Image (cartoon, rainbow, N blue to C red; front, side):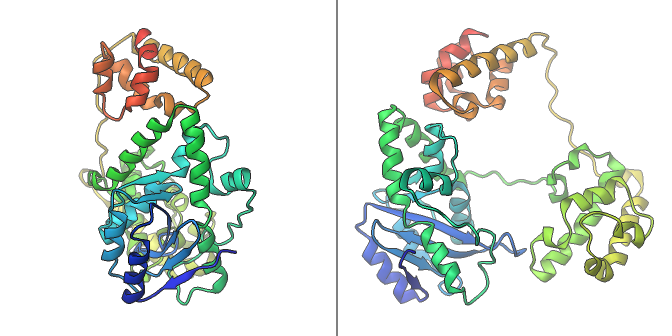
Amino acid sequence: MAAFELITTPKALAALVEKLANEPCIALDTEASSFHRYKESVCLIQISTRDLTFLIDPLAVPELGPLGTLLAKPGMEVVIHDADYDLRILAKHHGIRVENVFDTLVAAELLNEPEIGLAALLGKYQGIAVDKKFQKADWSKRPLPQPMLDYAAGDTSHLIALRDILKEKLIAKGRWSWAEEEFELLTDAPFNIAPNEEPLFLRIKGAKMLKPPQLAILREVHAWRESVAERQDRASFMILGNDVLLSLATDPPASIADIASRRGVNERMLEKHGPRILAAVKNGQSLPKEQWPRLERPKRWDRDNDYEDRLKRLKIVRDGLMQQFELRPGIVAANQMLSEIARTLPGDLEALAALPGIRKYQVEHFGSALLKVI
């Protein structure tokens, strides 16, 4: 169990930032409310040096400017496991930019570790057994019980030691420059996000397979669910799951009893909301054709009879490179990248390097082999 100091006042935060100012490396993690609350917020920030651990309560100290200044220092390496989400929520809710990241998950992927979860890595390299019982806990409640605080402190207390091991292995394999490229992209990602203007109901997995009249129902029941979730400040899926929404859209109920027969619908929720759910379904069914949601047509490509053959050859080469270098598919070239290469036919390494999303190390180590088959 890691000892820690809980930071709950601006004065304590300022003192912490001063204490950490000359540290070359710290570990960081966050706990958010998105699993339980409609309005996402950062509920806890864990920070560790090699010897000390601190838990910052952003609900008690919402002004995190001093911490942002610390994390933005180029000379301060910040170790995070699976950094993407942590970096995005710190940027979104507190305007914090972490300038110099080491992501232990990305490092593990580049090393082709068979298991890349933090618990698995700590178990393998440090013999530490991690209890994940509070992984889906409600971190927005106050006061936080001692066992949850102890759990949170454990998330970062061993991260720097793990970073040391993984960096040494990356250097030994000649892949440290690969990691540096990936880490730099992570730093920029939260500030390069194009706004997603697609309606939320269309982002439900399986929604784009529905026909327009079914989408009309889905839009209505989704809007009902979101209004309830926002009013109660509860995560949307806790009101009604996406599978139930899709079921209501593809097989519209004729009665409340029909809704009750759906898997995932509980009696208490139906008793409270059944008539409104049925009304939302009826509203969707009654919409005239011109008001049905319409999906954008996918981009049409000129007919290219050889495209599929080129893509198949690229996948064969990619699979060979995976075996040769002992790497995951996405590290050599993800399917989407292979599709882009097959369609655009870059003529040389310079043209390949110009494709959006491709990494320098992918061009250098795998580019020639991929271009040879197109």
